[in-house]
Image 1 (tube, helix red, strand yellow):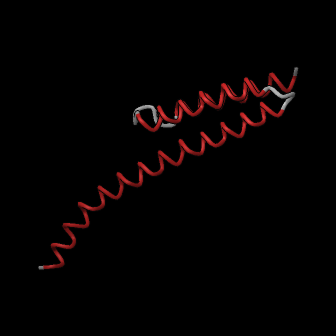
Image 2: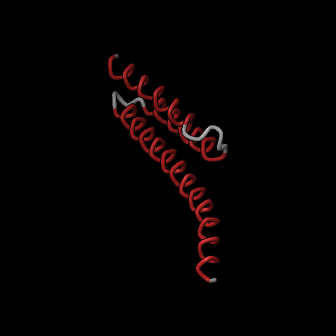
Length: 96
């Protein structure tokens, strides 16, 4: 009888474990994109001392990471968009 109770409890726990796993993976992806954005921001600042542009984009990247963490529907998308824009900015400041 206790085996049936344990099996019933494990299926209920599995849904909670899956939800926790999905949340951790979403937050990890947001954090990875944010760290990459900060690294690109440091690269922008290091090229001919464009620290004001780098600071601006790092603040925007932090806001995007916060939005992605707060709004589950957005998830990683704001961070990815900002990372692409920052890479384009790095390309422009390093070419000129």
